Image (cartoon, rainbow over all chains, first blue to last red; front, side):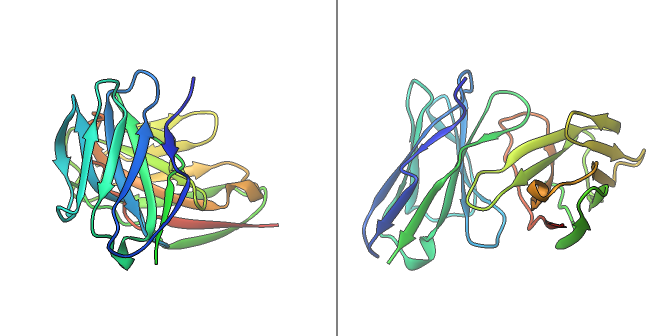
Length: 110
Length: 111
């Protein structure tokens, strides 16, 4: 049974560009959450998707947007990249209790 | 959401039992306590979850006193591979709830 799959694993973008990160949830999970983890910090909640709608959102600007597809997979989009957006982006899926995390996408903005 | 407080770091020798305590004074009635483990450049991995008293699984034990204002993660006989950051989280049991991470406890296991 595959866990949470994220792609790509690593990405380098230039400041001002846009990026799309992808997540396939664990089989049977219908809820997807996205987190940003800066070096040495705990993961920070970005937003959560359920039934193709954003259900909750953390303290992130509108440059961060997302989408969930009918098969429960999800995308995270970040526009107008800033150097401070460099981080590990984690996707977590859930159904009931507890989260299953993917290995993340390492985004570097130069 | 209940805020948690954990030690920033801990050191332990291989083979010893390690106890990491987390304070959560404002825990709500329907909140569960969950611990995650994270290795560098990987996503957090679920270790154990509990509501009250004691929970044990194949990798750890979780002790929760009657007032539930703190909890202790116990790792028996740690090895070098247990070197990681450990996060204590408090929230509703539903997997759809927003999960808030603190800074975690960095455990260093020494040979």
